[in-house]
Image (cartoon, rainbow, N blue to C red; front, side, top):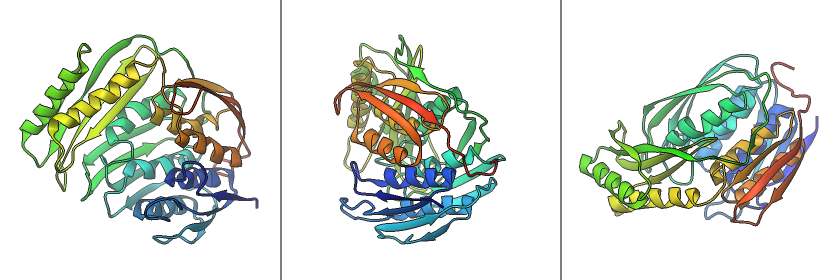
Length: 352
């Protein structure tokens, strides 16, 4: 069995290196040795949400694992056959449920049956995609390339208490389609939510009013939500529907942060994207490349910002898969990404 060694401090040096490497190890059947995990972070090594990712994907492919402890900076992972089924994973903190499902999804679409995954943890927390982004932007793009997935939220989870609960239904995928999006077309609508949990509803109203004021002259249809949560929290989520693509942006409230500032932040991020000519926002570009690299044909897309996160993710993918890619553009600027060759390996999964 081939062993892939990954330096976890390369490039962006964060948890995405671990998540992508685990997914591709599970898919290809290659053993993984990853060292210097999150070496440059304030708290290096595995944190609870990373440990949950390792535990979760280990369970679905019955892997042999060593080094999966909080604070560990080196991990060895030996996968076996991917097993679809019904799974429940509890992060036990406000760690991101979205990042856990992103670890499991690439592998489970290559299994031989439907999987139902429930994850308890954070649903709207810093430095990760919000549940609304996953459900309303990321999943529709997956459907477009042939990956079928359904989701629902049972309870919202905010930092620091977490306690949210989300469920995913994942279907086997026979073939991942190519993606070619270089012209997003006209902006058709802006919709979204201004939400509060266990806080006065006027906070959501103030967030909404700030969004509408700061988006001007663009107009938006924003719904007010009171959501069920173990702790307190607020968020704004904005979704832009263009002729050829969807995009989304979130802003989170926190203690001492004015409601108006939450709304202003969401509006500002959206307007920055809208002022570009790109199709994919930076987060969507980063998240979709693993799937495009597993397609049998090449893909091309434009992104509003080339990030170190994207480049690092492509570097990890290239360690496992026979792909070539080109990026036309400068760091932190608009650019074009081309997955020039995406040849599927002999996947070591439930169907192969």
